Length: 320
Length: 320
Image (cartoon, helix red, strand yellow):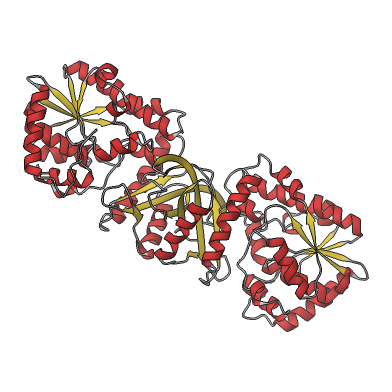
């Protein structure tokens, strides 16, 4: 049973001191690694880990081919300014091979989990002799996994999986008592710039969670373009999260006066405090229609764009 | 080449007199039949045909299993009040058999066309010895078919098909020079009540145009429920057309705290004058969110509801 620390009761300074001690105690004189995606959770863990271990923490950005446009360069550049060197590991082929012919959402998540923890990190850990992986699991990940809503890629113990046995290293999860709003407080206190700790959440399975059906380099490239349009257009809204989803269904449209059996992109933009409940952001129709026109123009083959109007529950934030 | 008569230049009284003469001239002393769906076009043709031919016109409502909730009863009741007897022909099994395993939109339309004109009407015509079918093709149907956007079920000559050869009867199309707004003027002048001539358009392939992918009695029943919610909720908006679409894609949702890989319904509500160009109606979010909640509660298995925000073009009014 994990005891929740709410954002209201959280004392960020004391929390950080306590976790620094815990990490040092667990890792001892050895080295550890951590995977940085650039999201709030993994960025906060990276700063916390470097505060505790300094150069004994090796921080890795896994280029899985499923990230957003320019994401690797952006994350490496940002952390360099913060004094943290980030190593980029190219694992694109491994991920796309693992995702070939997988359409079921849970199988997708499992394929990514296995590729990430067993293959890519198993290899890195062996190469550098690290025995611990620091990661940014938060309480909402655990809740959703245990409840059987979505298998989060970073949850093991609560499912009865021992990472030491399964992957050959131990996992340290310093943020596991927090929810998103708490993590933001800690990240701020650790000196992360606003651009990071205020970043909208991005899912563990990355853009593969944003395509319904088969994940291929071509389909990821389409949803990556749509994501760039949505993030560019909605970043000023103050919404909790916004995203584009490539559907597998084809719908009838027309281009230059002729029928085109084309693609559909769904946009979701959520108001939420902690991701447990969420409602669609009431964006002005001027914004929605411009977004639809931009996507239809910039993303090849798109003839239809929709906006989510359901709440969570019964919806979830991501579609996959 | 068909000469368009715009709604602005249309003199409804003169138009009706001219068409009555034409129909009498074409049918001579024989009998004719017409298919009434209850939409503006076929209702107007029914009134025009009865004005021209009286009891020598047999009016048939084809129950194809793809119509909306209570539609047959409603249409029969309404026309009885107007002095027109409508015969209901049950062809549900024929239509579902023809649609089995058909997902491609054009193949769906073709299966419905063949079932309607060749099988069902071919049989009725043979039984009663009629040699003419009156139908409500309008200019927009012809335009879209000729342009290759959507094959409208009621367009033949312009595709080089001779109905006399193909189906064994002649087709008379008194409304073919008009668009939707012109038809409404004629319908009004013929004494149709507001409830009919102000009715929102409904497609020839009926609810089969509202399911992406396979058409089965079960999937039609789902989209029929969603359609009832949408029509009930949006009838006061003054929008040109509003509809619900059942997607084939499944998305992740949650019910009673557990994951449900569920269904998605898309809602479209259009502002348009003549269906050639259309923009999404700027419905208030209170209405959109209530619509989503009602559909998720009333339509089994729905966890996600979206609203179309693209314009036509590049979208089309219907999805299939």
